[in-house]
Image 1 (tube, rainbow, N blue to C red):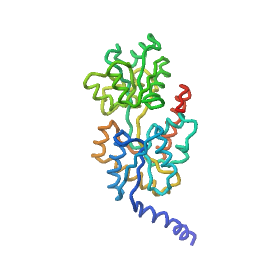
Image 2: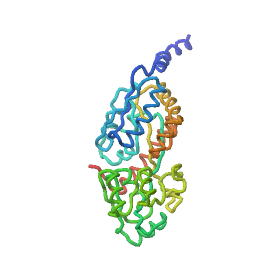
Image 3: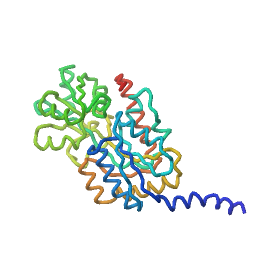
Length: 316
């Protein structure tokens, strides 16, 4: 009788998992339409809709450095009908803001990491360096005379530079811009000498020989430009900055729904058309278990909190 009773207790959860989803799912993207976050979200939402048998609708909620969308998702009902596209911004913001209205670890349930990508070390062609080692050597000779652009104070392109200067024990002057576009424009024009942009954003200018990329920022070489070394193997061992996307749900969602979402996301990321579309954004598709993604998020938070505190950066 005890076994029967236990089985009966499981029926509501099992039944819920079988009927889920019975209505459209909202995917919150904490960025504006046309951004990389938006584009990746829409590529995944389209295929995930097919997998789930219900429409996945992208809801753009830009503002406050990505915090507006994250807070909205964290406070949503934990019923599986709101999911959130997380990026490095949320891990960075944990250290960047003294007070947030959400906790990335406490208020979310990880489902799966979806992509991995690269930032890169890009320099103006006039800079007399061909490698990371040469750049570091030049920066030591011209201490405080070289500057690097970023997409804004506290942005990943800023912190990638801060981590680089800290590990290399050099001094570069940070020049923040309102987005990667203006920063790249001034890098191409020679107003700044260095930038740590997303690799995909730099590629068109590399092909036209208006920029030189010395290395990529991840743990492994990029499948897009495998000829480029990683920063770690090019002269700064241990350097690691990853561009990534991953899906979260509000904490409290049943394990059965998380399992269903993770299973369908794995199938989504294996789809040839999704992989092809994401390759155009410099995102290498992958899938992980919720536990693996949770551990990855914690490692990202640890890294960026340390960088933010060491550089004494604040968004407030």
